Structure formats: C-alpha cells, structure tokens
Amino acid sequence: MKLRNKYGIPSNAVITIAGTVGVGKSTMTNALANALHFRTSFEKVDSNPYLDKFYADFERWSFHLQVYFLAERFKEQKRIFEYGGGFIQDRSIYEDTGIFAKMHYEKGTMSKVDYETYTSLFEAMVMTPYFPHPDLLIYLEGSLDDILSRINERGRPMEQQTPVDYWKEMHKRYEDWINSFNACPVLRININDYDIMDDESSVEPIVERISDFIHHTRLLKK
Image (cartoon, rainbow, N blue to C red; front, side, top):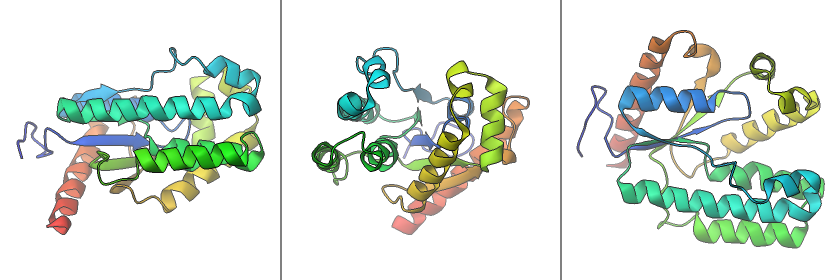
C-alpha cells in the first residue's frame, strides 16, 4: 500500500473523529489533516433544510432530520472512498443512530414506528460488508468537567444557554455508545494528553500513536 508521509500511515487511510460536543473534533480534524497532508470532511450544517424546523418542533421533524443526516453522511462516505481515501472526517455516520436517534426515541420525540424504520434503513445501508467503514475511529474523551470547561471557553451562545443536565446526558450517552461500538477499530485519546490550540507540535505523538495502532491492527488481520 502506497505511503506518502513520514509516519508510515497509508495515503489512502480514512480516519474518523468522534466525541461529544465541545471535545474538539474539528480542531483535531484540521491538525491531523495538516500533519498527514490529508483532506478533511466536515458536516454540512448550513444546507440542512430540516434543522430550523427540527428546533421548532422536535417531535414532528426528528425522523426527517435523522434520515437527512443518514443520507448525507452515506453519500459523503461513498465520495471519500471513491476518491481513494486520504481523509480525516469530523464526526461519524454511526453517532446518529447510536446516540441521537436513540435519544429521540427514548425521550418520546420520535415514535416507535419511525425509530424502527430509521434503524432498519441504517442497518441496510451501513451495517453491511459492502459499506466502506473507516480504517480507524478516534474517540476523543474527557471528564464531564473538562468538556464543560471547553464549552464555556469557546463561548457559543446556544451552547451557553443549554442546561448542564443536557451535557451530562450527552456525555453518558457517548460513553455508553463507544463502549459497545465495533464497526471499525477504535483508538481512544484523552483531551488532556495534548494542547493543539496552543502547541501544534503536541499533535506529533498522537500521529505516532495512530501509526502504531493502524500497523498493529492490520497485523492482527493477517
């Protein structure tokens, strides 16, 4: 497999960054892409036709929103692999069903029929041998206090107005999700192990860990 960086990471690798709000997924995506000379893939929020409707009426629009996200992420995943890899991806297709759709169903803002339809569609599209899963999912983790501190530091008005109980619930849901996730290899990285914002070189040991992890994972598959 062709290599094009000093770390020995395949040039066609696809690495997905996952973690709850405020954990620094976008920052890590850009830092790794710069270090590896990979392309980035970010979620397209501005063009989502359901987002405003959803925030106005969760119960009516949650199913529509989740199906839209599923379709867009599926198309993006196909585009990445058709291009030939070499991407760092901000957020995974797996989080929508494992966390958000499940949360809407359990809270009563998505009906049982809609939830079952959504999960059946997800499994038919994604959980098959034909779907191109990432080579690695990096899970950014940290304590609830650390994540709340980061949310406060970046000062986004909508996040500042969100009750702390919501962030507690999301933190737990993410932890429960990743503990049972097995669609692709997972590398956990604690957000206290680096400081990319103030020290770009702190990404170097992370890239080395990724290289070792991918190499070891591929040896086990042989």
